[in-house]
Image (cartoon, rainbow, N blue to C red; front, side, top):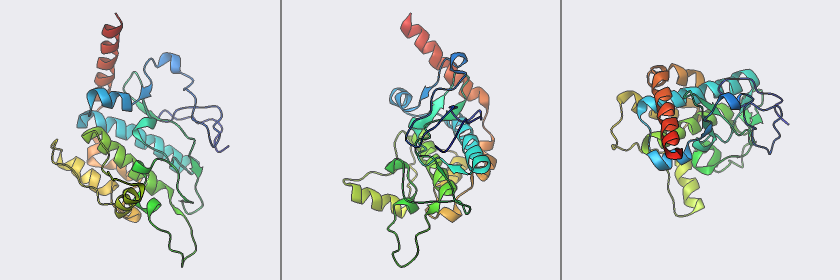
Amino acid sequence: MILKSIRDDNLEQSCLLESDASAALPADATQDALREKFVPQLKTMWTFTEAQAKCFIRDAAEGLEYLHEDLGICHRDLKVDNLLLGADGRVCVGDFGSAEKMSANGKVRYTKGTYMFMAPECLRPIDESKAYEGHDGRAADVWALGICAYVMIFGTVPFGASSIESLFEAIGEGAVKIPNDPPISPELRDFFQKVLHPEWQDRLSVCQVLDHPWVATADDADAAAYAHSLLQQRAIASS
């Protein structure tokens, strides 16, 4: 057990989280009529607008900030499947089955999570000539947050490969190509470059993510309007 009661608006709440268990529904679920994963919506809508995506990324970053700075824990499996959308348009981070307490210097050992969202340093060969110390948990979560943003905007993950070996090699190189279609703002392009930097020490921290011009201009009204339209569509479909 690593957590006993998470209390943060941007984290899915659970009374007890075991190391191999997913988080339970939040205590206020009855007041939150819509609380579900992004992936089914991506299949229907394919992508989100920048205005919507920056709200979702900001909320996820706030959840990570609480995990990292208040609890000393990294999520280790952040992905769009584990971002849950509320009826008010706010997003919380869920599924802490891979979460782990970081060492005093912010390290975690070995790899956990979903390959497509893993940071390059997690999949690079270990240097056998040096004592293994693990990798930076905060930086790996920030990379995964960047991949989440990429999926929201472009509707796909940046790495594709014909085998697991070639996938690991591609991610390990860390060269993320930003498509020209759809066109994106200079601020978002800069955000991608800074959170998807191949070297962990050169990535933004979660606090810096929240201060980045693309994220800092998030307007809750854009996310709320999306959630409202989704609820309306469901009401029409069920009538």
